[in-house]
Amino acid sequence: MSENVRVRFAPSPTGPLHIGGLRTALFNYLYAKKNNGKFILRIEDTDQKRYVKNSEEHIFNSLKWAGLEVDEGPNIGNTGYRQSERKNFYKDRISELIKTGHAYYAFDKVDELEAYRSEHAKRGETFVYGPKNRKNLKNSISLSDSEVESILSSEKEYVVRFKTPENSRIICNDLLKGTVKVDSNTLDDKVLYKSDGNPTYHFANVVDDFDMKITHVIRGEEWLPSLPLHTLIYDAFKWEAPHFLHLPLILKPEGKGKLSKRDGVKFGFPVFPISWVTGNEESKGFKECGYLPEATLNFMAMLGWGPGNDQEFFTKTDLIKAFSLDGLNKSSARFDPKKITWFNQKHIQGLKNSVLKKLLVEHLDNENIKFHEKKLDQIINLIKPRLSLTTDVFKKSKFFFQDPLGFDQKDIKKLKSIENVKLLKYLLSVFESPANGNSIDLKKEIEKAALKHSTGFGKIMKLLRLAIVGSFSGPDLFETIQIIELKAVTRRLSFLLNSLSI
Image 1 (cartoon, rainbow, N blue to C red):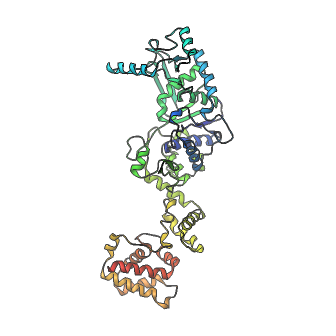
Image 2 (image 1 turned 60 degrees about the vertical axis):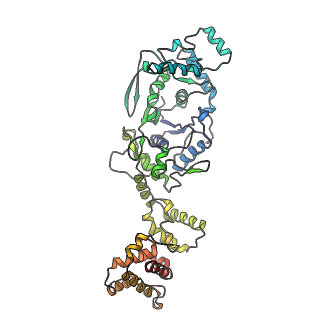
Image 3 (image 1 turned 135 degrees about the vertical axis):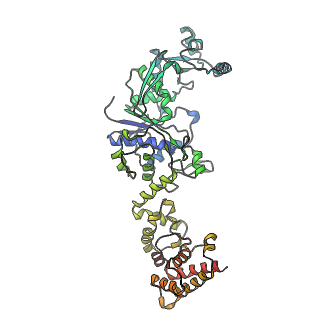
């Protein structure tokens, strides 16, 4: 085995890239970069019946958005990184296994196999095509050489199955799970080569990993049951197997069962890195929902890995430096939508203000909203600490550009009183006073109003905030008033006064 670390991410283009796949890609990427190795992308598209249009593009664009740069793979000047481009290679390799007696032709028809399964089911048994019954079925083990040659020359459909050894103990090693021992008699003779001339996943991924000099196979836990077969195929070729590591599952938010697309719909969070469109339906990804790539990677890394201390916040560079296989967890991790939002909020604080300013300007331009360029920097400074999603950049600042269109009736109910109406009228008279011009000592005037109306400073601030911002929460009120200016303040106070007077 090469001493140079080479890992691969090998998704199938059967739909959009799920966040579970992104996490697998991330751990492969981090291990490669930590060890000055190569991160390889391979598209496993042997199952043409399940091929979904645009899924390859979704995989490429998702990795690009996440910043997981590929060292070798499709679309970067290389060929042979799609399994559909390697058919002749697989054909030669399967011939080797047949010649050495580790694989054989099987001519059983689909309806014949279904009949066998039905008969076994009636007896309360499970039909297994393997060491115990292969000699009783229609294949090159049970038939004579002449019969086999006759069938092959007739161009009838056939598959190639792996010849599982009888009465053997298969010992496999997983870097995370430890040693796995399996009785060969419990395994079936898996199909390695299909009737359509394409290899199955089990065969193609083994020969590809060897051919591409993969040193570490880091993949999802769902492939752990396939490890004994893959180990046997390596042994059959007399190849040294790579190191295997099977990552635990990402669980639903409630902690039970594997996370799925339906969970995203149910709980209202994305499950894809970027949006996926099918027909007229769009499933928004983390990107479109306002999550930063580095925040998403930070969150994904913590789903199944830890640095060995209390640190949680990592940039991509930090992750590369800190990552090690020893830090991976054996148990599955629960997806927590609140946690990724927390990570995103932290990463947004590290953004340059110019990035958020650009997002805000784009929105304002799209909505044809007029704005003062000189005030934008101050606005971004005020709203930045309150941002959890980049998509909220206008939502959290729209009151700087537009008067509130209405108020929550619960808020109106809380403030509806004769005293508050009098307070608002007084405040209006202060803001409309010609003596104040365009400036006012707001704190001083609020203190006067509190004294005059025998009320608290906070109560007046609450009224002002609802009038100006449209809710009881928001950035610093004094700076907000300075930005929107007195004319807007008086207009908004009048609107609230009318709402309380009704």
